[in-house]
Image (cartoon, rainbow, N blue to C red; front, side, top):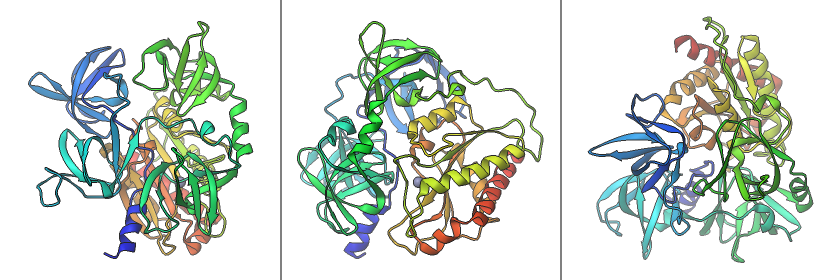
Length: 504
Ligand SMILES: [Zn+2]
């Protein structure tokens, strides 16, 4: 492979949402009234036992967002989102992310040693040490070594964006799931960092298609401008001023003493309770409690709008299924991006966020006409965090969650549509919808594929993400922005859903 090709693969072979950093996977405590122990890593596996609040267990491996735990002489699986790290001093460990598929995990720091396992692009592991160009890691319960050229280190918690950019006139906001930062304005230049969707950085210089951004520690690096949006600081800052209140979405929601799920619980709140927001802190809000104690709540467990439909837990009516219709099914449609997050921008200037919403409206109309109860994660041009989108899906116990996106690639000849799933239990829905699309649109079919997107990975429901063609390909951009295409694509998705639910 040429050096350029390798660089190209390193930059674009992964496009995932922000990875969850398992800073400490050795031991966790149960952070819910009770947690089912299951025979496998998913809600479809049989229940073999349970644990109650505060019980501490050792994690021996992870699969997606499930932990395999030791139980005497046997083992079982529990949902990671119902646990908290047992070790509160986890600030020192480093998580790493593989930048490539098939990264060998070896028995010693040498490329001639035995291969113990392989990491896929986007997989995370805990880094335990370093020896020259090799990092020692714990991955899926195995201790081994990986070459540092193919990984990115992620340390600690990220600072609030507002503080990082306060003094700068212009911002670069990442619109793809993960983006490499390079030493020079060149795809073959050394990678010096990895930044994620929604993060903003001060711009130092723009050079052709490249933007030089300020990182932490007075460092700076270059990113490909195609994968983000440029904006002025004033626009960003105004968003921080009117913070309003948060509304709790579920009963027994934890309010914590610090902006991390491993911190102590300061209080609990029930669905519908409201608290004033003091400030934003990454994925968390600092809120004001009547006691005046410091209190933080995760953005993905609250609503900040006046959307009263979200303030009460949804009780699903039991409507009998009628074959050939979508009656009795709740379908959440998730138009990708919105607000300051434009998504990708096509060669002809199409903003992804604008056509995902048009597609969503048409799909919602078709699904409603077929009898489905349809909920959309946004109906206007507003920013909705990825975790909020997942919370809406879980909150409504969606029978299907459909995230709509349009794709981009620096190679303008790349074309076609792709249907992604994250967990195995989502595979059948992805295949069915992909077949529905294939029979109704004229784009190249890239198939249904596993993809590590946050809206799928963290979703307890049957969730898929569809990339409806490439805006970076000007011919395809012209096709997919037409009314005719949207009509055919939404019909294909509808047909795929109908086929899936008729069989399942
Ligand atoms: Zn997108």
